[in-house]
Structures are given as C-alpha cells and as structure tokens.
Length: 155
Picture 1 (cartoon, rainbow, N blue to C red):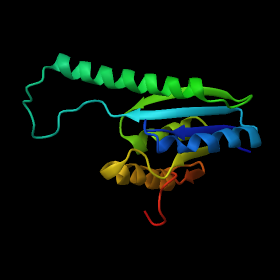
Picture 2: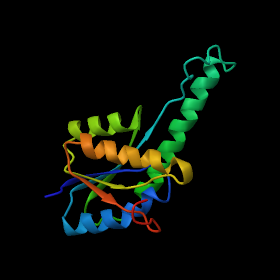
Picture 3: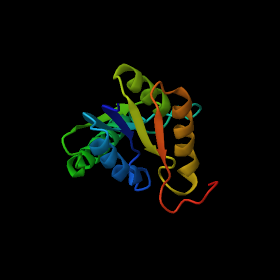
Picture 4: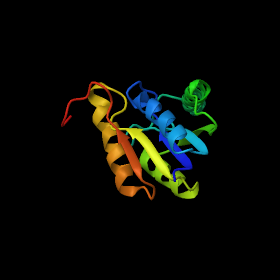
C-alpha cells in the first residue's frame, strides 16, 4: 500500500524520532522506496535591509555552505538508516518549506509522508509544528505524524 514514503527532516534529533517508525513501516508495509528530504532556505536579504554590507559573493558563499551542510546531513541519515530491502535516497530542496514539500509530494507520486509533530527545539518548535500542520492540510498524500518522545499532551 505504501510503496514510496517521504520523510521530511529538519536536522534536529526531535525530527529524527520518526526513523524507528519509518524502519518498521518499511519492513511491515514492504515499502519499495524511502526518501529523506530536507528543505533549506537560501540566504536572502530581508526587505528594508538593503543595502546590506555583505557582498553578493559573500551571500552566495553563505547559501553554498547552507546547501552543503544540508546535503551532508541527509547523506549521513541515508547511510545510517537500515530499511531492509527498500531503496533509500536523500533529497535536498531549496525554498519555502511547505510549498517545496507539497510540490515534491505531488510530482513524485509519494504514497505516505512520515514526520515528527515537532522539529528543532525551544522557541522554534512551533514553526516546525506549523509546517507539519500546513503540510497535513496541503499534501495530496496521507501524512503520519509522530509525536517526539518527551512531548506532553497538548504541547
């Protein structure tokens, strides 16, 4: 039933709480492909901040470093994940998180999305939660949300 599973991550341990669930799903549902994805936002000059003292080359370097860090993280997740017979791949996208994920799901025939209810930590936790909520509302594929360990009901 769930042959192609997408797992959005944000680089946090909280978001990675889904990995054990994805592994069980891969084996139990005989998933054919597991795709780990992380979306990064390229560095942009905030409106009203122009002219910013950074040179265009420095901005490009910051964006390149962010992309490389994201690619390295996804590669490490793929290398340590054991899906059994399923094929595993890592994907890095750039742009607004919810829009990029929704578009990717639609264009790549994703059967199921598995993600944590919270990513990151501290104050930014609600941001990832809102990504989860927006994706739940906009995705054409079912979304399985996993509550991170240590979360309390209602939080």
